Length: 271
Image (cartoon, rainbow, N blue to C red; front, top):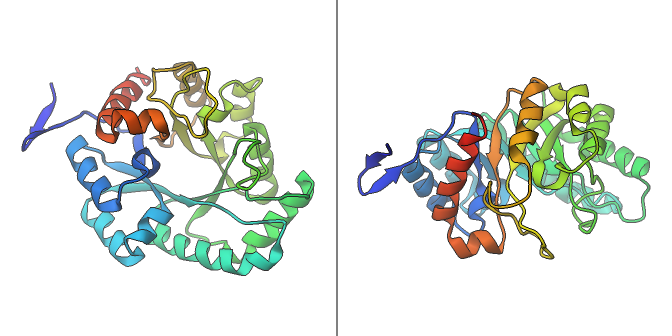
């Protein structure tokens, strides 16, 4: 039975679950924190741009005061094919890293970065150079794959390539299940380098879909999340599983209703 807090029902959240703040994409941090309290959320993944909109210092205080565990802070990466933009991006990412460290997050996440006109290897080498001033002993940096139709965000488009890049640059990997669930021999990919797996992000996909993003609540679509999660756990992954759902379906249902359903459905994946 749900526990009541005031006039709101507090859901039962599996201890391995975290909520990614893009699941309430248009809300402020303050609105997010109120919903997390209502739903009984204890662990979160935080989009730095949303924190910055509330003021980094104030945002850090609010998250701390809410008693939340931050599993990772994330934002977009570099424009790798234009080194003249790197100093500005390094300053931005440095501020985001400061916040992540202040919140005690073990990981700071980025997309691999735009690399228009560069080969994959050239892009990887450029990323290594761009990241070098940002390396810190107290926090790891993790990279996330992106869709091929979004080259302005990243050049890594498969989980296997994410792990290859991570091994080459000594990074962690963010596994976006919505993008990699159909990859060939997923179990071997994960098992070969599971120690680099920083976080796993889940949502669903209702087909046909021609929109980006167009995520759905776990259980509503075709992503075999139970199988994928079983594969990851069998490989020895012990980290968080983030609910990251965004797009028109989530907007239409409403953030609170969609997140309530997601928390319940995701919790059942562990059973």
